[in-house]
Image 1: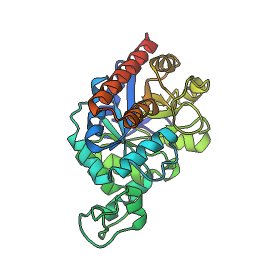
Image 2 (image 1 turned 90 degrees about the horizontal axis):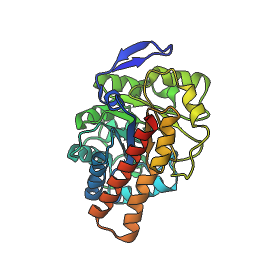
Image 3 (image 1 turned 30 degrees about the vertical axis):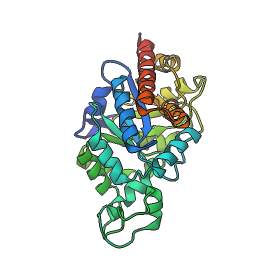
Image 4 (image 1 turned 120 degrees about the horizontal axis):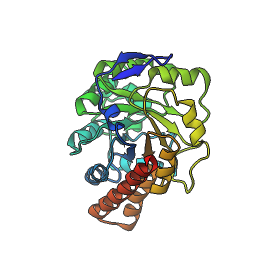
Amino acid sequence: MSRPDATGAVGTVANDEALAAAFAGEPAFVPYLAVGDPDYESSLAYVEALARGGADVIELGLPFSEPIAEGPTIQGAIVRALEAGMTPERFFAFVEDLDVDVPLVCMTYYNLIYQYGRHSAPDGEDGDTEYEAAAGDEDAEYEAAAGEGGPRAFVERAAEAGLSGFVVPDLPAEEAGPLREACDEFGLDLIFIVAPTTRGERLDRMRELVSGYVYVQARLGTTGARTDVSDRTEESLARVADWEVPKAVGFGIADGEQAERIVAAGADGIIVGSALVDIVAEGVENGDDADVVADRIEAKARELKAGARRGRE
């Protein structure tokens, strides 16, 4: 994959072309679910339902105890997943167990990525308590072993599991060099979130480092389904219009009509999380069978994908 440098010229070449291909031909539908919500097996069924419903890329949330970019809906999903025992190693096993044929992107927080190399050995002394708490695992699975911090070990394991890239909401572009280098080494993409307030040198740095696609945040605040389309969407898209990667808009998209309007405004794709997590949460609250919930998720995915397609007509 070709990645533009700060001037927009094509620079370092990454190996993975899966994400670029996902945006070719028609607007991409990029759904998100938290892995392990509400349990491992149900979560597998829900992600596979997204693929049947037309997902072009799927963002898989690796739960972290301090999800600063997330609103109450996704925070609830993360709590359920952590309480059900989700950890980084179970996350990678989950990715390997999935029966889908679409690119998968890991969305998580940098502490988990950075600390992974220090804790990935299966045995050893008691580990870093901060890490164990972050991973939601108080058992021995991630007990510390001698090792170096940094993103390389996590990225290597992600590539081995079959992931195509990362979204890391709390990683400033100014500090993303080591993760970018690791992604280049193992052929993964690094997606940045451009907020309505992102300007100047930070925006330039994101343009220099981004690959795969850019996540355009449609509105300020945290994640969560909304009933309207932000009037800042077109303005946000305009700031990245000349970037060479596809532009996918997220934050607040809840139905097919909104998806249509976002694509009509110039987006190359839509990212939807909370509207899908709401279906999972409703199923948990009502005690619904996982197959029933999976059917609802597939139906919502088809609605969103159809809306995105209409926006291009």
